[in-house]
Length: 119
Image (tube, rainbow, N blue to C red):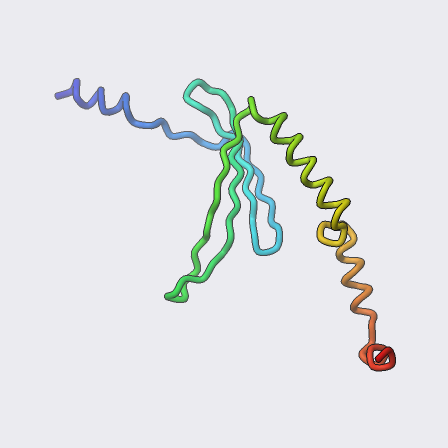
């Protein structure tokens, strides 16, 4: 019987702790970046997007989407991501702008009387 128990233990997945983690809060979403280890002790990255949702029963739950990124793909992934971010910034700069707070302040300075005068 002990032999069967040993075989079961061999097939169980080892408990893997995160090697390094970072949470990025971005509005209604939180992104988790986690460095993990394979069985061969090789590192990889998981990127998890988590959004808080309300179920039909009124209780909160978190919807999660996960991407596994292995180091042999890092360079291609970074190149592609950089290209896409640059495209968005140059093609539609108001969508992703570090000055979005400044834009919000500009709108906050508009008086309703000024809007009526411009009609």
